Amino acid sequence: MIYYIGVEDELRNTAGTKAPNDIKEICADKGYSYRSLIVPSSVTNPLLQKAARFKNAESFWKSLKKDAVSGDVVIYQHPVFGWRNAQSYIPKMQEKGVKFIALIHDLESLRKGIEGVVDANKGFLDTDQTLLSLFDAVICHNTKMKQYLISQGFDEKKLICLEIFDYLTDYVPSARVKSDTPSICIAGNLAKGKCSYIYNILSDSHNPDLKINLYGVNYEEGDAQENLIYHGSFKPEELSAHLEGDFGLVWDGNAAETCAGNTGEYLRYNNPHKTSLYLASGIPVLIWKQSAMADFINANGVGITVDSLYDAEVAIKTVTAEEYTEMQKNVMAISEKLRNGYYFSTAIEKALAVIGK
Image (cartoon, rainbow, N blue to C red; front, side):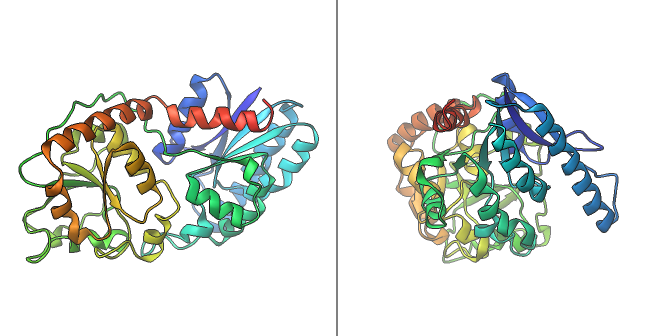
């Protein structure tokens, strides 16, 4: 039996983000057995909430320990609440012959929170080392994250690279034609605290003709500019059909000159989910040259890289219509894989092979 763990909201019966939901859907399609870890959202007092989470996690792991037998496999999505419970139960279950595979969504020891939005979760800072080291196989984002984990003492033979997160959607994109006016789209949390670079891309001396299409929450309406066009916020499953632009921008931090701050530096190691969104939607990517995902973009010919956002307009103009058409062909091939769960399916097969399944 292969189990996979997902997090559900006690009241809404839904998980928090699209990436974990997609993993759940891919696992369900493979016939794996679902086990839900319930977030006790009806409890609002912080101390009582913490106690309720611990109680729910303890009950969850006790139940899983009872049901799982020798030869079974558990797929765990990291990080998730109840890690202390997991840290206690996993070794006990491994003694019974149960194997564990972790899929990393984020490494808090590298990200250290979201500057201006979310403080670093001190509890999760330690779990990247203490909890993940218990797993029989770990699916990390890419070779840069893999090298970081090896430097932290992880066994290279247990590490599998995902390459890129899948993005399941029924939307089937059509090939795009490069527009006469250079344009990009930016999707995500548009809060100044997290993405203040957005409001600094355009100026008289930088990107005077660049059109920027914005999608997401927390847009600062008071900072509207002529070529900064806000289209609203959409559900993940609807967003692909609304995106406009020659390229989708993958950037983070508080500066346009380079990716800076903790979230900007985090791009050196992680696979931003918006990369998957753009490519699944049929849009080539414009990304920071020093990011880990730049390797994937270059290797597959699905976008362009820049050191500074002040170079964005020139970089886009440099791409010829013929080059863009070729890029589009490459994007469409990757899009099909992302929309059908190819990358996680490939990674989990490799992980199962590592643990002898």
